[in-house]
Amino acid sequence: MVLSKFRWWALPSLLICFFQLHAYSQNATENKFRAPVRQIIVPDEDRFIPFAITVRVGQPVVWINNDADDHTVVSDDAFNTAGHRGTNVLLKANGGNFLLVFKHPGVFPFYCRFHAMLDAENQPKAPGPDGGIQDPNGNYGTPMNGVITVVGED
Image (cartoon, rainbow, N blue to C red; front, side, top):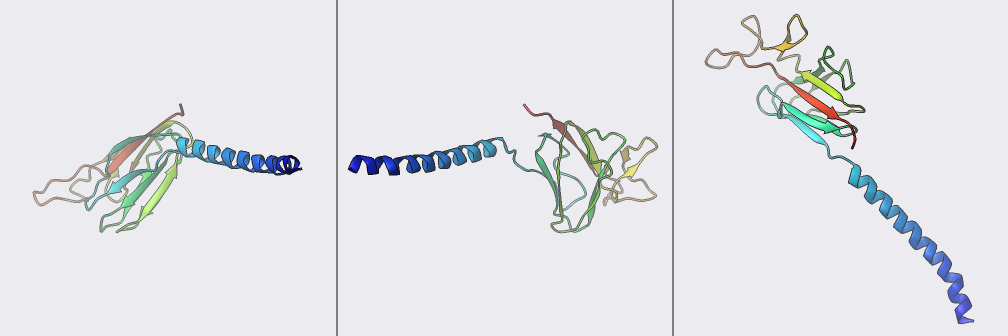
């Protein structure tokens, strides 16, 4: 009689253990392949750090503005092959952020429209004497831009 009661409770117990183990292994597999968020920071100066990064398809990228000035993330659509064409987002001063997840491989050049100008070939160029930011020595900075290279999945 004791043996028959054991069998009655053993099957449901084994099934519960199986489902818990399956759920655990599925979550572990998803976490293993979930790529970490990459950050592009605007420090307290007009530039993106790092200038260039490489991410995998599906990996999120977040821009964070730690500067006291507003900045933007604008896609350079003439050379954008990674999607998100027409991106033009304001990064508010002191903590504004913006997140993108790239769904296919390619290159995503971007710039700040406040601190970069486009030449005739739609390339960002440093602002000149007619506009832009000048340092104490009278030099104009490099354009505020960057590039993300998106590579395919393994």
